[in-house]
Image (cartoon, rainbow, N blue to C red):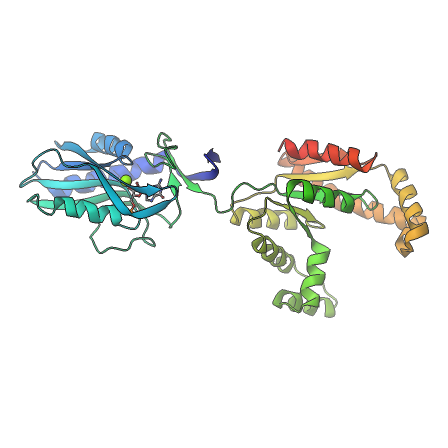
Length: 369
Ligand code: 5GP
Ligand code: MG
């Protein structure tokens, strides 16, 4: 992943793939022009790199020239094309092949056609390395297309984002979600996970997704997913991971502008951790860390028994029950600890001390991500 100005981009087309596409274009065009000596016209600035690489691959004699047009502002194409440097040579009777880096709306191409309208060239053909069919709004024929791509902003290999990225030898695509910090928060019962989640949420402007809450919300409001979950529960079965993941997905989509998420209560199994990775990946994002609050069993037992005296929670009153809950927690999370350790994402944090001290320790981990 790379960052240019305020935006993040992910690798999209490798230098090797670009090379292969150019080779194909060069061979195809050479075959079509036969004995003619074509004039390749690169459209500056974007096509400087591709023009250079392309003509080196062109197997026959040719001429090369440039015109300079500008249409893009930021990450959007504009209608208003400026002609900065026009044609500087007479092309009467010549076979002209335009070399474009990318064809998006086709506005630039429209301007190119206008420039050549009165030039009396023998033929005018269009070759482009990249083409966005979903964005193209014109009828001009595209004679040679290197790589068709979806309608998303790309940079690299001559293409820039506000001046940056042109020098990159490969092409990157804008990330759908910009940089997020996504955490999986773990802690045995009594570790203070809920308290800390509240602080982290405020401090880092994250959205806290507690799977239990999400489930209750969906079932209470009879959403399609809630009813589906109920149908499994009523038959006495477990709710399949996919249903849970779909609920989480809906939560993530509801909060697409968030700085990130704190997942709480999920994942519990390897399969769920993988499904969560896939979900984040589909959003151009990732889990950055599993953070586990570590508290000694004896401290937990003492804390929970203390809490049981005032909270009236039955499961906080019986020491054997408490010890079993702690054991279940470790049995479950051991697998996940391995899963995230393998990705170098596991962070154990000492959960004994004042609330502020623990928040401080957690922040230390998050700030380094
Ligand atoms: P069009 O006029 O067809 O909308 O866009 C053509 C010009 O806009 C290209 O020559 C290029 O300069 C710019 N452009 C179009 N799409 C992209 C893109 O995804 N990334 C970048 N960096 N420039 C683009
Ligand atoms: Mg261009």
